[in-house]
Image (cartoon, rainbow, N blue to C red; front, side, top):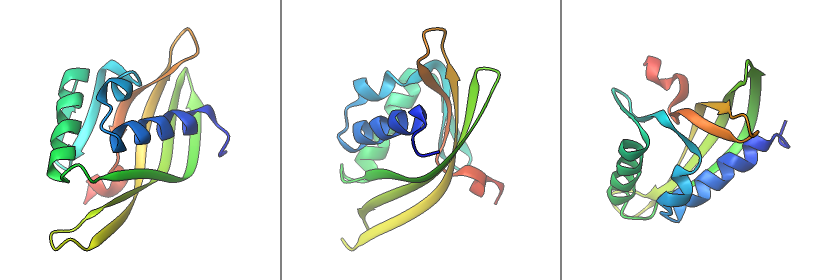
Length: 130
């Protein structure tokens, strides 16, 4: 499943996040998309998502690196559920490198022109259940 076009979309988003290129990043989100910022906090709409990513970058002092691992894509009715390993790297409070792997869930909608746009970005996946 690693050759699915959504892998390239998500990798482009990760690159944009790591490089703090929010214009490039927002090109992959639907206008009414939702982002889980952290458990208990979700924002909706491209402007709020952009602001959340800026705040996240600031929180990690511009040193957050995002990469993806294994991927599963389930398509139906013009949508795709993506279940993917998300790997985060950043310096910890004492400067020691921290690496976290999450099992993220994303929902994408395929537009009439064939382009995929993210409608739900949940890097926490089922961890939201507690």
